[in-house]
Length: 361
Image (tube, rainbow, N blue to C red; front, top):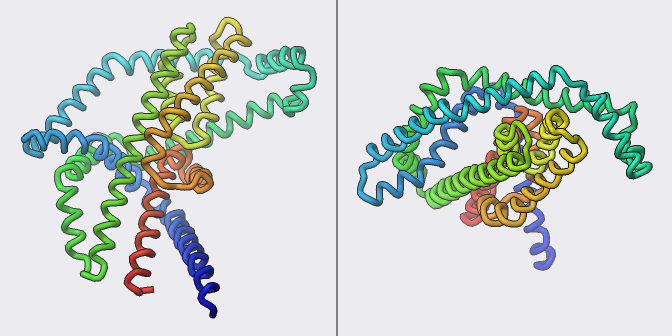
C-alpha cells in the first residue's frame, strides 16, 4: 500500500474504531442500567456532593486544618443550611405549589389557549395555520404536553422511589460522600498501584482526566443553573408574577438539561402565566422577554466561561445522549447523560491512544 494511502486510512480507521467502542460502551450501559439504577442514583448524588465540597476541603487543608475536621466542618455548615432552608424556603415553595395546583384544577387551559390563539390570528392573519395550531389542534397539543410531562415525572419518580428513598438520602448518601472525600485520593492511588507497569501511565492519565472533567462539569453546571434560576426568579418577582420562587427553581433545574431544558421550561412557565397574570397577552410577552434575556446572558457569558471549558463533547453527541438519557431514565437521565458520556469518551479515547502508542493494538 502506498505511504500516502496509509496516512489517509489510519486516521479513518482510528475514528471508526473510537466510534464503535463508544457505541458499544453505550449499548452495555443501556442494557445494564435497569439492573443497577438504584446504585447509580445514589452514587451520582454522592459524587455530585463530593465534587461540590472537594475544592473547599482542599482549600481548608492547605490552611492547616486536618482533613477529618475539614469534612466535619463542611457537613456542619450543610446541615445548618438545610435547617435554614426547611424553616424559610421550603414553606414558601410548599405554599406556592399548593396554590398553583389549586389554580390548575380550576382553570380550563384549552379555553384560554383557544382565546389566545384567536387574538394572535387577528393580529397576525394566518400565523396560527402556518404554525399548525388551529382550534382543533389546541386540545391535542395540551394533552401531548401533559402526557410528556407526566410520563417524564412518573419515570423519574419511579427511579427515585426505588433508590433515593429516605434511608438512602439520610444515611447512605452522607456516608458515601464522607468516605469519598476522606479516602478518595488514597483509593485512586491504590487502584493505580495495582495496575501493571505496562498500563501504569495510561491509568494515571485516565484517572486524572476523568476526575478533572467530571468535577469541572458538575461545578460549572451547578453554578450556571443557580445563576439562571436566581435571575429568572428575581425578574418574574419584580414584574409582579406570582409563584416567582417556583418559576426560578424550575428554570434553574431545567437549565441543567442541554438543549431541551430551556425549551421545556416554556411549558410550565407559560401555564403559570396563563393562570396568574392579569393580562395573559402581556404576561406571555414578558415571560418570553425574560427567558430570552436570561438565555442570552447564559449563552454569551455563562456557557463560554463555565461549560465550554469543562467537557469536550460535540454538540451533536450532546443532543443524542440527552435523548437516550431521557428515554432510559426520564428527567434524571437527561440530567446525567452528558457527564456519563464524557467519562466514557475520555476512557475510550485515552485507552485507544495509549494502546496504539505501545503497539498493543
